[in-house]
Length: 182
Length: 440
Image (cartoon, rainbow over all chains, first blue to last red):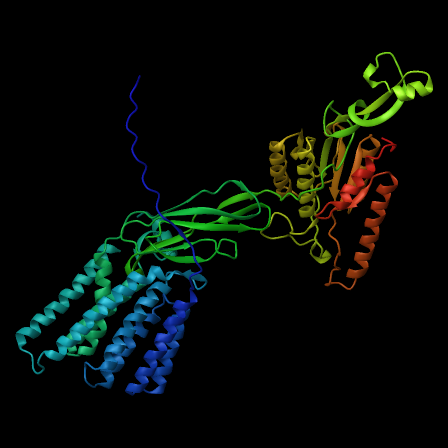
């Protein structure tokens, strides 16, 4: 009589997910358009003239149609440049709201570029991105609080040199990381 | 990277079945670094605040290790099936560091379905496959794309191989006892014309040497003064040959007869669709009674199936009907040779009867001594071609010619019926053909 080798227990079958209806894919693009319109309204309230805002809305329309286009870069950078041109206190509520909206535009365009218009989005898929967005924005608020708390005025030359070195290092580091991962 | 790979990368903009940075990563890195650096250099805090979240999210994506080779597999998809809904499971191995999976899966509307954006944690996805048309078709093509955090790195899109099933023609339940044809075997469900051992009385005749004593009808014998015996019918299997005319597939709209149907094996509700459904239903009805059923493709004789009995024969016939429909098309003339039809078999010719050749073939089969039934599968309520002013007149001529052909078959003793879903007409015609006293 031969002894049977011990039978290893089979690996458990993964839980089977059933597809529900989900949200239509165009909702993501509609969200991009809605956020861009809110940004335009805030910029108008800050004093930006109508003509540049029409250009901004045009950029938003292009972005909604082609989320993977270069128009997104202008759409995200436009509010920052506009606030610099307009001037005013560097840290104020409208700036923080616009920072959050610009970041939101960046994230929404990132996902909208992955899927076609006629797709279905299952909101569970976006939960990690939402959590990460909230954490990053919390970090930005912390940075803004730090800026408010720190004293203003003229900076020492040593600090300026260190800052330039840091900026150069940041650029070189980003380029190196991009080259390594591409 | 060789030249071919370089050309492919240029055509696909670097996308494809490998991990690659997306436009969002370049945008995040360029804007994040640019705004932070310019903000620092220009002493503008707003620029730093705008650039910081972009830079942070880009760094998170760069720090997260994405890799591996995402794989998508389909399990639980049979090669053949029935019309209606069926379930299958798609297994997704998204690889390391993946956060979302965009995968094309069937939805409620049928077809290949839209792309679904799902969390990468969903590794086994149940899908419901729906097809309403029988025949060969594609049920699933799980094209997919896997992306890392914020969609900054992606693998794909990958066009997956198509997975399909052969949906067998549906079987409509027919009333039992459709037809007694001529006897072939010694036992079966049908009354044969020759004497046998069934309980159905055939005749009372004078006693002959060899008759069994238990057959003696004593009441008649006493009255007649000589011995008489009761003769009963034999019971036998029937041989049935389904002759399918695959040369033509016409639909209700005459204007579309010369236009090819796209994406389907046959035109839904067309003559070939009706003929195949009728053939499957008739085959199921006869085989359930224990009869032997065969198939002949009038357009392509090599695609026929020899007569046989049993459930496996029904599966074989339904599969072959799909093959016949797939190969359907014009052929020079219909063929039904004598050796394709067993002696004494019932021949059911399923055709729209739009030409004289098939009528001649049907009548010749009847003259050879077979019981022949012509099933007209021309769709009811034909619509004229609206693109020409002669549409109505053409339709009228066509209908008259069709009626002349049917009448010619009737005059040669071939019953003609129109197929309907309940097969009431077929049932009546076959019962009429089986009446005692009818010339065989």
